[in-house]
Length: 65
Length: 175
Image (cartoon, rainbow over all chains, first blue to last red; front, side):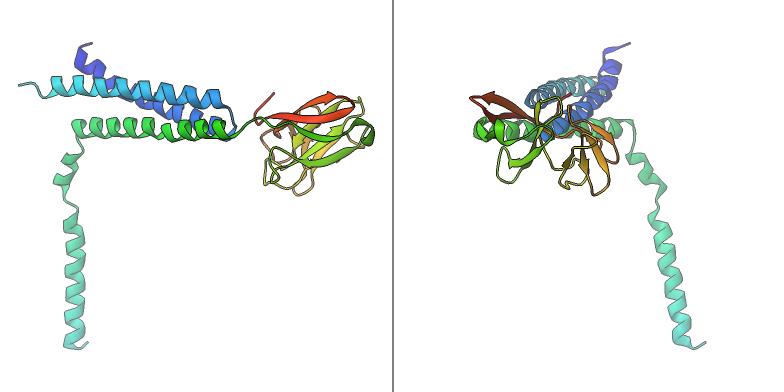
């Protein structure tokens, strides 16, 4: 599978990871489980960073002349 | 039918045609593969960043929320099979201390996790009962046994020292 396709599909994977992390963070916040909240936030921020990288890789390949 | 009315009917028809004209099939092209990926990426970033306020508020809550040590009662003042209400960790959060038939002290916040009605100790059945909708909680674990509640009662951590019972912390999710 080429780089562009991997970048394309990984964004959907990171979307799923972020949805899961947000739900964990909310449950942890209302359940006063601090470690769960911090875990959710860290995973979501790393996932967002990786999604951004993947998006730029995809954009570079997609709009290449 | 008068001429005015005929004209009105004619204008209504024109309006309907305008509505149909708004459905331009060329607009569909705007949602193509690229736009779909960009929208998905935007959603990923938005959802990812939406977690940060929860982290910040948890951090701020930790700074303010020092663990309190509160005296509830003397052991002698609470007979086996009896309960006593108190407030912990703040005055707005009611709680119940139970001395079970096994001579064990347990305490929970006694707002029902269904609709926040007060929960009472039923000595005969040895359960915690929410009378509003007949929610039953296990007195040893605080877990829901029957009725509408789905979540456990927050558990108050206890310490027994010098013949007195102290509340020393709380676990909202446990078991």
